Image 1 (tube, helix red, strand yellow):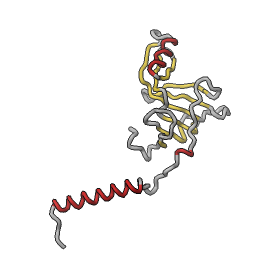
Image 2: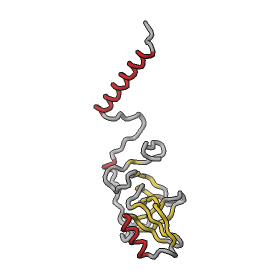
Image 3: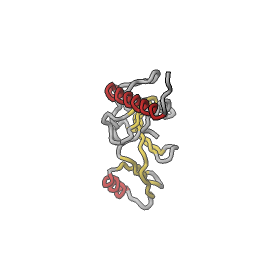
Image 4: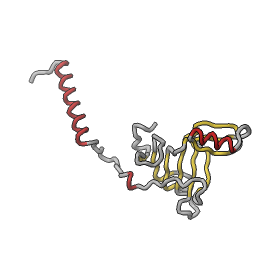
Length: 169
């Protein structure tokens, strides 16, 4: 059996790579053994009720800088069961910004606003993370990431540390 020259081997390797790409394009992605591939459309990520809903339980600035979580008790049994997390876009001093000014700024820039003293937080309008099944330590049982931060529209991905997505950093 004759050995191939480097040029011939490179040509065959390119053809093999092209064949694999075409197979994946025609038949779709191949599941890797051992990975769960859940159908997110059936998972039912709840729409965020909002601060004026009876299930609203407050918010806090997380220990991870630049993130704010909002908590809900959707079934109103006295236990938190839903949380959304937003990125902080900017901050303002509460002494220099009135509530009315902060609301106008948030409306103009299409942001959400969180008031505290001494800081007013402006966050992205839609959450980055959606968490269902929040325990007493505020850890999430199920968490989805919405990289586009464009609201619930089906492009959310189940987020786990064991199988991170390429779009998540």
